[in-house]
Image (cartoon, rainbow, N blue to C red; front, side, top):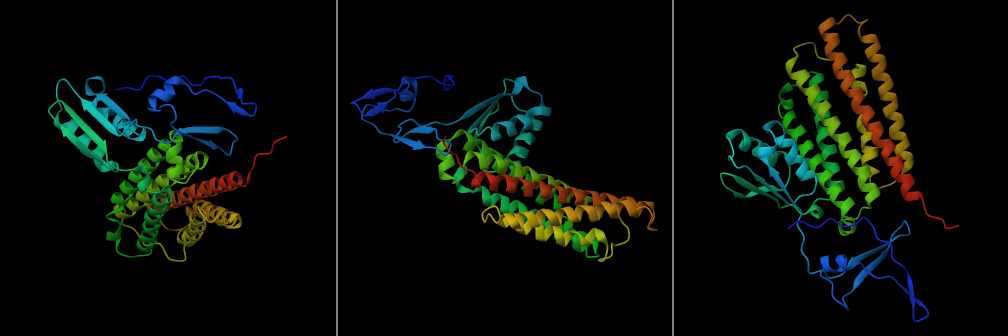
Length: 347
């Protein structure tokens, strides 16, 4: 059953009763939708913005967000996009149907979608319809845990890249694509969680993060996804290229310890809030970018050959972009610090 479209807002008069109590009536539709009866209780919260939030204490109404996808109205090329869009929208039940039935190519996309996301399972399947249900409670995986996992995946990948560039066996990079897929899956999960937090005040409370910071976390998630993309790009370059190893003294490898030190400071300050460490990390990353820019400018003057020069230039560019994305993260943390330090003053 679809939820009827609600009005965006209603204006109601404040009334004075008993000479000292101010009251405002609740919309009848809101009361009915939450299964509230006379003498039931509601919780009134005073938000940091100064607004009040009213929530039913013991609603008897259970809700589940559902979404239907009609394959007769979209092409196979956009099926995965619609499934991921349904996932990000917070849909708990995704119902896909087609009058003509599913072909093998459709079922392949269904499998790809399930492998790409977290907690989605097929619960009902027939020749012309499939129902997919989200079995994952959004509060079971804290946002900090997902970010730490993404950081760990990127950090390990860059360590492996460093070793291989220095002459180690390149086989350690064979699972690079799997790592990148895990990063993508975590990104989708976190964007789904953030969307649910923005829509649900109860989820905001249970996950212990306010809506403003949740939106900033979604930006950090995107940053790690881009880092993962460049890690995969570097790994593929290394696996496909047969050239001379890069010496440990090369500026290309010299900036990687700077990145590791900076990222440790940034990750620790997702909770610790030591703004001086964020400043330090951003300065180190800025220095690393300048070193790589100079390396790229001088690369073509070195006697390494055109193919080797192009190979190293591409790796340097990806490392430089990874450092730039990390700088973006430092700026997000500065924004979060200022938001936490701000306060409302009544004049």
